[in-house]
Image 1: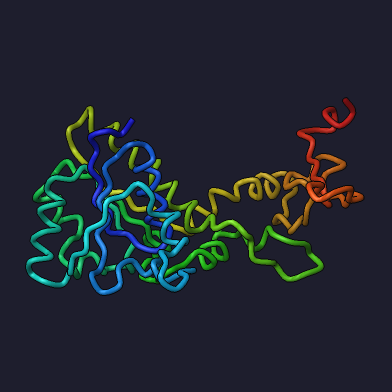
Image 2: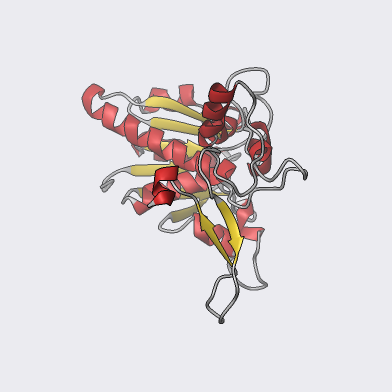
Length: 260
């Protein structure tokens, strides 16, 4: 559905690449620009000797790749030329880095008023906007850790990387909306998505619980996050074979479901 849409991908690691990969899966032409000295830092994560990094591959499928020295004059000219022809630009460098390189929104907008300029940052505008962030920082400040585990133990690290990939998908949604709006206005726009905000969005049930009880949501273990249904939780089973799971999880939508 995004055939003909060109995406200039200046992102790295996971939060940005998961956004541009989603756009690539939807049919966009994504050109990933990497440092000629080692490429995306993600290429060195979980990489077996002499083989590509699986970490890198699962976040960069369906993309084209281009090695460019962003600090050289020729490299800058090449990237600006690509930006002039692109529909979307995505970056997730540290705060202020893209501007120091000479590819900030104000610069790119002058040569391409139709571009959708999307940035993934750790925090929104405010006292923490210049702080860097990774997944677990986002999950911590976004509240995910305070909702995970039980009150008897310290909060465990959640397994899924909702701070990174979750933010990337939020960014992709914003880009799709901006592309749709551009069909009517002919103008691009500037999108900034904060990792903290994305994790807060994933934790909205906690606000409903607080509004209902007047108290901050507590870690409820394996019980339903709503805390309104029983039984809800993880129950150990007697194993019977290699393909049998040792646990089952049940969470009725309401007590009437359990009665039925």
